[in-house]
Image (cartoon, rainbow over all chains, first blue to last red; front, side, top):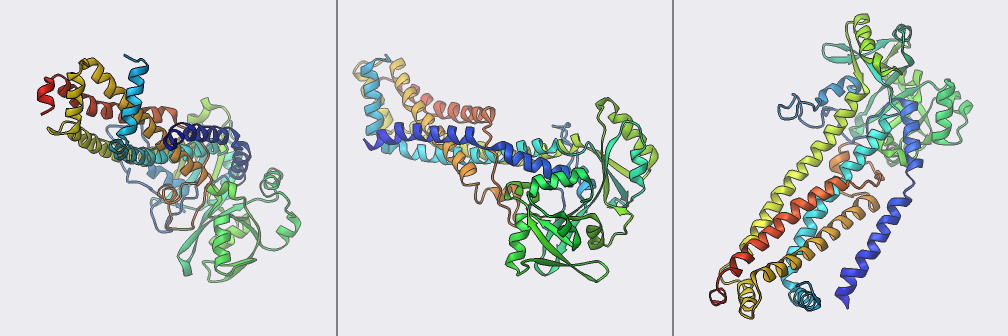
Length: 83
Length: 392
């Protein structure tokens, strides 16, 4: 009886909770706040918790990869957010 | 063969041999949970950043000297504004303020509070704010991370900035920005532009950079060319580049975990394969008995397939559901710091629920196909041997 509950009823219940949560998420409110903040400050950098002296390059992609040449180098961002 | 007797036998066998499968199920759940959680996180952040980037200006001009970004004279704003096809030219004053005693830094953004559009935006962000009182004294709006940090260090209503000239500037904390916007404003301080200039030691006629829009996409390249001809020491970055950079960043981090997942799955599958192909395993005896009582090779493979596909589905379902709950209900404690960092102010973000169905489908295939192969191939090898030999 316990295993039936674990393998059938609980997954069903969890699925319903997940679907309900997913559809009821009030995305507009938080999105609107974020878009307004970006429009006001014109700063769109996520608030990453990094050291002051840490490089703004978050990963070591300094040169264009030969296997994936479309990928842009992150160093370009330093010109915008270097300060 | 898929009749009631077969299903009855299958379920009885699964129930009686539950201890045999529990290890494989638990390991699978753990691996799928970890990978799904990372993918949920990276997709959620990517979606959020890409959505918000729509509010960002099309271009940003920075002045470069010896490879570093330096201040721009204010009169460049008029020069840029005079170009055809350009609109919404906005001067920006922003930068990081380092709080030496604790080794933490804040992002200070100077805003023109006298601008009508900015006033409207401000009202929608912070609700009721008496601008007259706000502008009467030196005031600022702080992100919730900054607010928590300042309160912890006994700066309840005001904070004193140290300017590069060695003077101190006391600024009143007017309001805290909503925690809904923590992804962008956790370490942010918004203040009048002149105050930000004073704190950074900039002159009144200096700004950090200039942003502007070009409504006609076809003119983008021409405008960039004009800017480069007008100023020789600038760098123009367009919105698409920033978009690409963030996409690459989160793909890179998610990709690292995907590689780890493949390594773990490969090891796990090898262990499974070894277990099923052991010479004296119970599997051999079981298959030998079934063959001896008249089951065909096809029936045995079907039995093994259905038995293991159930294990695959159960593990995958629980792995994904637990990952969903962990990321979107609990806001991914521990794991979020891989994506958001924890070297500076602690950030608590509510992640936007996004389910990457394509990625989940790929994980399922990468997991289910090798899993089934690792069980079915040894089972088939045993089934084709004579029952007497198999039961030895």
